[in-house]
Each structure stands twice: as C-alpha cells, then as structure tokens.
Amino acid sequence: MCEVTTLGAYGSRSSKGGSSAFLLDSSRVIDAGHLLDPLQEQSCQIEEVWLTHSHLDHIVDIAYILDNYFQQRTKTLRLRGLPQTLHTLRQHFFNHEIWPDFSTIPLASGVMALSYEPIELHQCYTIGEGRTIEAYPTDHTVPSCGYILTHANRTLLLTADTYALASTLAMCEANPTLTALVVECSFPSAMEALAFASKHLTPKLLFEGLRPLEGRGLTLYINHLKPAYESQLRQEIAQMAGGWSPIVLHDGDCIVF
Ligand SMILES: [Zn+2]
Ligand SMILES: [Zn+2]
Image 1 (tube, protein in one colour):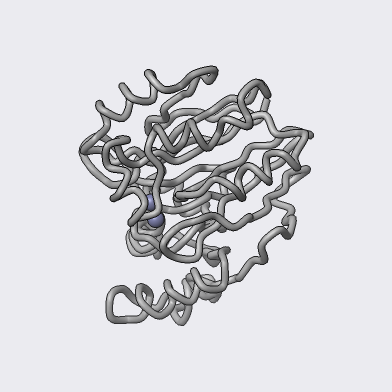
Image 2 (cartoon, protein in one colour; image 1 turned 90 degrees about the horizontal axis):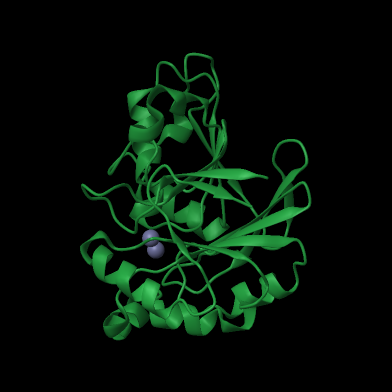
C-alpha cells in the first residue's frame, strides 16, 4: 500500500482547514496551499513543490515556509510546474513587490533559496526509489495540470482544479495500474453556472463525468470543497454517489493507493 498525506484538503483557507497540498514524502509535495501549519519546522525539508497551477490556494505557503524558516533551510526549494505556471509565479508573486524574489537570494549554505524548473506534460519523472510522477493537462481558468503518481505498480491520479473530465478519463482508461483517484468538487450542483465560469466541478458534474469509470473498483477521494458549502456538498456527494463510495478528504487524511 502506498500513501500520500493530505496536508490541506479544501478549496480555500478557513477555520475548517487549509487549501490544497499533498505530502508525497519527507521532501516533496504536490501544491503548497497549506504547508506551514501542518509541517512547521519540518517544512525545511521540503525540496520540491510540484505545482498544478498558479492560483493562490495552491501556492500561498511557498511564501510563508521560505520566510519563516529561511535561516534553517539548507537546500534550494525547487518549484516544478508547467512553464506558464512558473512564469506567473515569477512575474506576479515572487517579484520583490508582492513577496521577495527568493530565486536571487542565497541561503546561508550558498545556494539560492528558490528555483524554477519547468516540466513537460506526459513526461515521467522519477521521484525517489521506484516512484514516478507525470503531469497531464486539465481544464481550468489558467494553464493547469493533474498528476499521476506511480509506485510499486500502483497508481494514484489527482485531478487538481478542473471542469471537464475528458483528459482525466483518457488517462484513467490508459492506465491499468490505477487504483485510486482524487477529484475536486468545489460548488453545490445548483451553482453550475459559477462552476463553469470558475472551471470547477459540482457533485452532479463529477458523478456524471466519472460514470465511465464506475465498476472498475477504484477508490474515489474528493477534495477542494469550498468551506462555505461544505455541509451541502457532503450531503449531495452522499446522495449522488451511485456505485461509488467516495471519501471526502479532511486535512491530515491519508490517501491509500
Ligand atoms: Zn484551487
Ligand atoms: Zn484554481
């Protein structure tokens, strides 16, 4: 059994929990919406952030872990992501105006605090022994990708923020070792117009979209609930799940695949 830890499960930050972040191992995360609170000083060990896209709920704690633990850090924090995502962070976030440009600031060890390392879609990258990660394109308001994580012949797919599920279905169908998926669900089904405008899913859209995968015995995890609609979303998910037994993630939950 392979495990990924949910550091932040929600589609926004609130008293209920943090926004998107998943711990892959002691030095790697997918997204950085919630690293500082759950990891605290352990966040110094994070060396790679695999970004799905540039939205604040997925990047914000890059700023705070660098700032709070600058002196304790010894290694460069490597941002991996689509070229457009890295460009946006460089231009609009770590630009000395919103937050320091840490790619020009050395740590005490002499290496720069931050680096930008673009990835290619559908390229398999090795991350640790026997573990690979591959990005595939998803459907959001900015360039975005989901990730496919494979370890010991078992595969987990994370959609991150998306509206259409066509590329996700294609990846699932092409992947015989897939055992689990994490799919976003942000707004109640009655808010379909907002879901479309902001390129997110509702329970209705999610379960309609996943219908071709029903019966494959996959474990379905759901994340990125907007906290304001949490109870309504949980109700709708339970009502519309059909043949699925979805697990709606909380901060700290383990994802097993
Ligand atoms: Zn988001
Ligand atoms: Zn987003």
